[in-house]
Image (cartoon, rainbow, N blue to C red; front, side, top):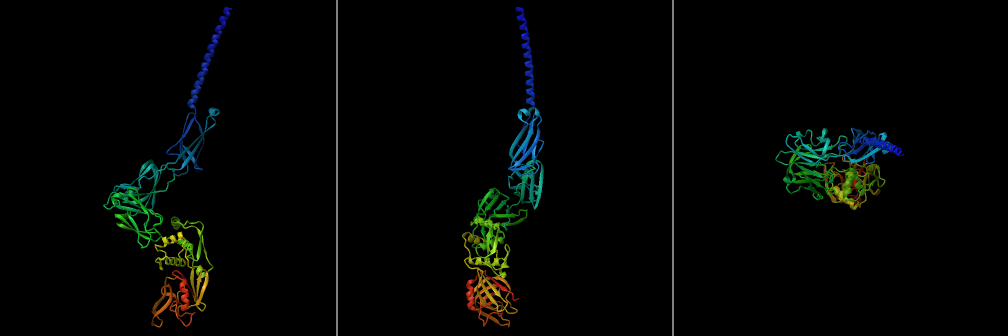
Length: 554
């Protein structure tokens, strides 16, 4: 029995050895397999990149890219994968937030563990580059350098009405301006992008000078003869402001006595630059100003042309908007038409100034049913005698120096006074009057209209043959209760007559009272004559700017 137990003991020992050896082999294989899997386990990441929308990095076993997608906000953008870089196939703006999504397919041998696909997402911002110094000083004959906040690969320059595009082989923050070595000074527009697939942003203004000349130079913008009411004026000097002007600032004053003073303020955004910012509206249409600088400067145009040297400059407001003028006159009841705006304009100076530059949409409508001799003269947005008469009436009622000639719409005090009346709703309190003179059929007749109705009818006399009263429509421009009229009669004799209730509408032609044996046919020397008592009734019902329409005899 002892021998039998000994035999079983030996067999058991060999079995245990076999199990240990087998387990070791299996364990080694598993370890080896784990090492192989760890080495070849697919890894992928999506990281930010200055030259693309995102960079895809992979390692381990190969993964197939199933899809690459991009968006800006909620809008999808077309993208593609090139050498691991995600690039847009169409230009997109600088400084926008982009989202990139890459979907990968994992190898089948790990799909049951980690899933069939891997999805990577990256949100980032497209790079942008800002012009660092808007003023550049260069030596004579050298190219002017522009410096940007980030390296750029595409730059656009607009100078002398020509735009040049420069694509750099290597992105850089310092770029020479093409052709600038031939210009002594000037102002140009610069735009740049870090990446060639970005859309060029709005251009920045850049001014450059040379380190030559004993007199400091100045480039002033915008066009000083075409200023909008809220125009910001920038003076860029070839030397630091403190060295040219010391601690003094330029002044701007209106040239017309009685005009509102300029109320804006000066600031110094760069050591070479002064900027004037109006409070609201300072530079009204057709208004003129004088800018006085603390020291003499040589003015250079943005194109580089050298102008006058001195310490005074002339400024003027831009031409007015005829459409907005008509809208305001209609709102204040100076016109026989009304205006209904599709968008309301607030009764503030800022809102009114804005509307002056961009008139609101709306419609004009006649306030009353009127004869075609008047309605045919109206034209929205275009200068016409109806608007001229309304302007003259407004200026006369407000104590302004009205103009009857070709410059009737160029009174520098017109717009600030109009806007004040709009804000205070100071409408014309007078009825809208119109004088209509009918030569035919006889008897010649004068009709006085007020607010769309005839309030007076009277026989009248117009000019004889050779001295006929001029046909057409004209505003009354000069009035006297009584005055002497002098001239030469058809027979060569002279006259010097005392005349009453005179309303001049064209040169020496007037509607006035004059004693005649009868009325209703041509017998004057060019004027429209009325019985004196009738002229006395007409006189207080008309005014400067009232239209007189003389209808032809046939």
